[in-house]
Image 1: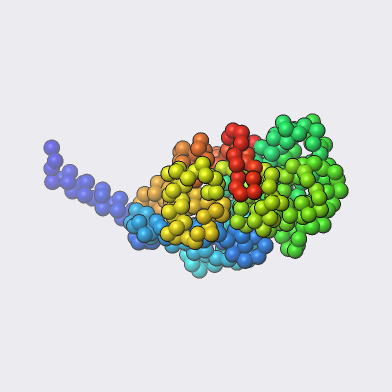
Image 2: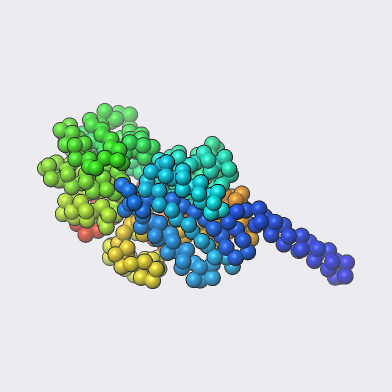
Length: 401
């Protein structure tokens, strides 16, 4: 029986809940009844500027979401600042985002060294550092850094896949590897050794590193060629990956070439290297290649193509960096939707660690996103693909390192 007293009690409870929600919003910088302000740093300039397309796709995706009414009635404002892929600049821009712009959290900032430079600051201040655009294993350490999470497959996992592939298809190979001199490169070398296995680690006959401040890696390629290696693993960002592919071809070095997924963009790597020179390169992918005709009638690809046509430019359609931004931002939107009315930083992080079998339009069939309190690597599978001069052609099965 509903009485006046019970109505008063339920009304008071509802008012208290509403007041609590409003108080929580008031205590969370960047969150109001109408807006969610988030921030990121992105290399729109500097040696990794090819990745700037990711930031542009992130911005475009949130524009699309806002055009559709936002998230739970709130518009999302992404403040995306250029850090030039320079860790000191990342620190400066991140502090600006937090202390001046008042963002609720950081999303999809790019680069191993840049993200590492602000990881402690963000964790000390209990600010989510979500879906960092790097596969370095140090961004999947929930025990030590519970406010930091990556998004893409771990570099060690990917390099392990390459190592197993080499061991299976070229058991007597001599392997050379080029790596960026930071956590990205170090993770890659560790993963490659793990994939090859202890009995084949000695088959790595040459290793060279580069600094992002260097103009070219031509001298490193000549040195690696001199090792006599017949397998060449390229763990480099787009500018240097393109140089490595082109230089190896130009000096007549014809090893099996394997390039990290973060540099498999046709627009920013294969075309600058020369599509004829890049033919035969192998990579590992977790997303659908927009140049592959097999996806022409795929609903996920159609959704992506419609997004590009309306919110970006035609040239972005075939750029895997646009595919990346499309997927990462869709994941962020899912997290915010799961938050409902509770947009405290604690709940944002809780929901980011509670994704269950979430499927993105542009990930390969069979791949879904799963996270938990002890799993801060949302994507854990990839498939090998080879470049045929026009696009990436998948082969084999989904693999984990």
